[in-house]
Length: 444
Image (cartoon, rainbow, N blue to C red):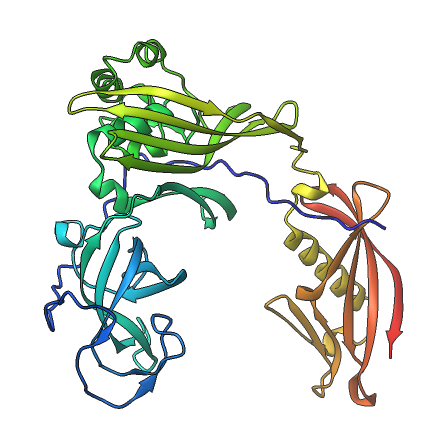
């Protein structure tokens, strides 16, 4: 019996037609105290409530005390009810609630890798929609940059998120919005050239007037270069790469690669690093390609080095790794491409259908919550309790057939027993399955 490993395939989803502007609250922080040159010190003494914080592990922290600590800035996270400043303290990820407007105040517009001094305190937060639930969190009172680290900034990464449009979790791009607030034209040009002929979640749509059919791509939009192959995009890149004959030749034609293309590529990661002393910009990126017709995928990594001046940028070096290729099954009806939750729901329905064949079915109570199926008799005794979160899925010699094993705890008033039940499921297509009982055994 071989174990089935379900692999989450790369999901190429739609890109936004324009970059969403974040609504930063206008509330201004009353600075409790100007940050002094000395850091990592206790500033005041107030209430004696002892707490703990990842900012100062293994040390007591007092409620409403003002502390100052140095952090390595990572990003701002503004997509939740609470705005968070994300950073690292001694290599450990930390977050603090903040309220300042970093988009319109350069003093708070930090870059990834900046070393910053943060004045903070432990304070209460009332959860949105539940005034009775209060959390004690780290609140940033003030912050300033101490120095800039010459580290590469992660411009693009990927995360798994639920997409309402497709009704499933997808692997989608995430662009560093705080970096975009500090971006210089030369960095914008370097990223624009890198993304010029590699897919970046592009989707057909219409121009701003709603007339012409155009291709909107996530990176192109994030860089404020319009749509793919737009006059705005091409004129900007041609202006900055006017001294680069190779780049100018590349820009003579413009590729279009929608996320529905049979053969396409996409970014898994993009890092960018600027060296002001040497006047260079280095862009390192990882790419995955996919050929749905031939059920193949391939990956490579690449590093492009650009030299730049006040009004130009030139690609001076490019190193690309060897390709690695994989065979993939793009058939949506293949076992490995079906969400395991579909198997669970089908098995639940099969078990209930078997119960319906019993004479007392109309008198029993059935609940199914959080993937747990509970069946009770009319006196409240549990007849069966299946926790589908603990289902074990195993393969068989048939590629479209699997085994599903789970436990059933029940027995009614006579006392509970635990059974291990194994079912055999054959995939007809992605939504239809044939299920039968294979065996059932008592667990001591």
